[in-house]
Image 1 (cartoon, rainbow, N blue to C red):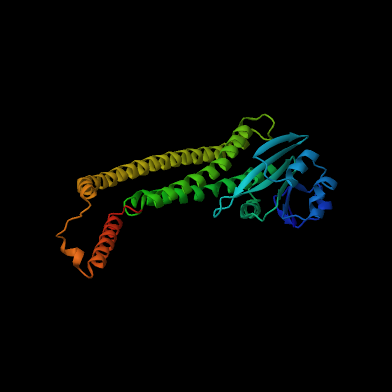
Image 2: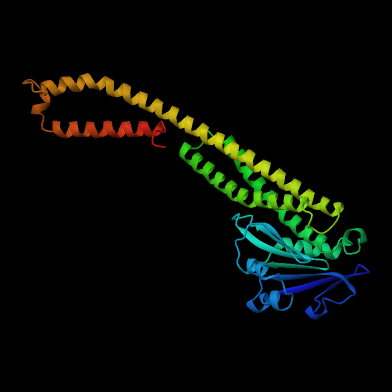
Amino acid sequence: MIRTLGITHEHEVEEDIPLEQLDNPKYAWVWTDFSEPTKEESALLETFFHFHPLAIEDCLHVLQRPKMDYYENMEFLVVHALDADTLDTTELDLFIGQRSLVTYHHKDLQEVKGAWTKVKQRAHNRKIWARGPMAAAYLVIDELVDLYFPCVFAIEDELDELESKGGRESVEDLMNQVFDLRSRLLKLRRTIVPMRDLMYRMVNSEHVQGEREQKAYFTDIYDHLLKLTDMIEADREMTADLRDSYISLNSNRMNGIMKTLTVITTIFMPLTLIAGIYGMNFINMPELNSKYGYFVVIGVMLALSAGMILWFQKRGWFK
């Protein structure tokens, strides 16, 4: 689907502009959004917009790292949106020109819809929209980064809960939860750190359109990404501390179990030695003449084994 939006010089918003009218001088700048485009719609990147072939290739072949490339009178950005449930990323491509912004994404993104709505609501603000397409690009990226925070906050809440219930679950279950959290933090880090580096490059690049005031907005996004990076690193250190604590706890617990088993074994070793030497082959053994003596002894052995298993289970040695 392709949708278009234009901001006139009187700061009025017009939507669903035919592509042939995008160059109309009455528009201060226009935004074209490719959402889940078909092959025919994707072909317009080359046939109508005449973008650089390398930029088009990056659009059509996903899994690009966040980056920024410079072409004639245009900046090309690759940024990533996060799925809050799976932490999988969706690539979003932005072509930022002097009077146009083109966004391209293979999945429907709520962040783009949110930025689209804000553009329409704030079109009357002359001070803001005099900055042109770069202002809309800022809104899109800001929406993306704002939705990174709930993902990190959710993991921090799980960490706090995990730390509070440390003594009520088995060490194995706790370790599995810790490693799951570390895996999710790693996925977040792989998304957020490249985005941070991209914003740093934008803020310090001389090629990016706009004056110092314009770059101040992207500096704000960069600050948010720095905060997210610090939060992730702190959470990773906390999971590492929890992992080490659980490993130490499990080692101490195993040492206690081995100590108990060693004591029991040591007690029965001399008895076993004596029984082995003599074989209990005495003439006066009443149990030898008992009709049910064998079955009684077998029953006692089974009961003793079951009792020990239940006792070990009650002590939590099987967890």
